[in-house]
Length: 246
Image 1 (cartoon, rainbow, N blue to C red):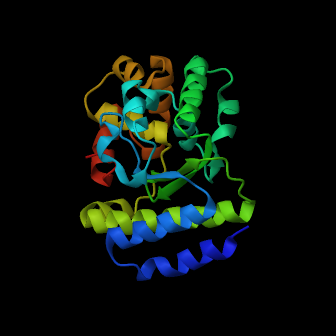
Image 2 (image 1 turned 90 degrees about the horizontal axis):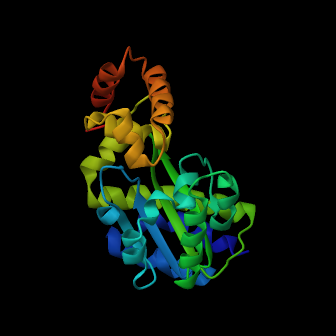
């Protein structure tokens, strides 16, 4: 284990100046650990494309274009698993959670395609704020075996790095994300809520998210309960007031 490298970076991060120096030092750490690629990403809203969500990163040449062209973001098992994860996890372990998924074959094809592009395995670390999942750090390339304590330290690095780069890129967004809200919604609930705020019906939301309208209704019931809303229109009003949607 190279725990000292992780501890040193955590101690150093607040002293680093600006985005360029911070990312350069982080990339040096990843090289020493054996990771070839990484991405620090803001949480995806389903009505947006992923093109402007990357805070920092380095991927195999052509892989981002392939990922977008083949619409892998809709079936990516690591992204789907991320919505429920409370701690860091390994990419290869996520497929087991979707054995019964109707998208299982496409998930497997995506993982094979990723390996052919040099992404043999990796880890993902969720970044949570007061509004739930707000971003993630993904590390990959050749297989690297992390011990539990290393995973925990990378989780801490993911959070610190995320807030530092968001603050550098957009202080207003950083302030909004860190504002106190006593509502915790899952990633799927946030996706459904965002689409509802766009004026979509359960059928429309289900089509965008690749789920049934009955599942959408189940998410909506959970959202209304968490927000203390009387109906969907009331839920949207509360969500706007809390800054959950904009």
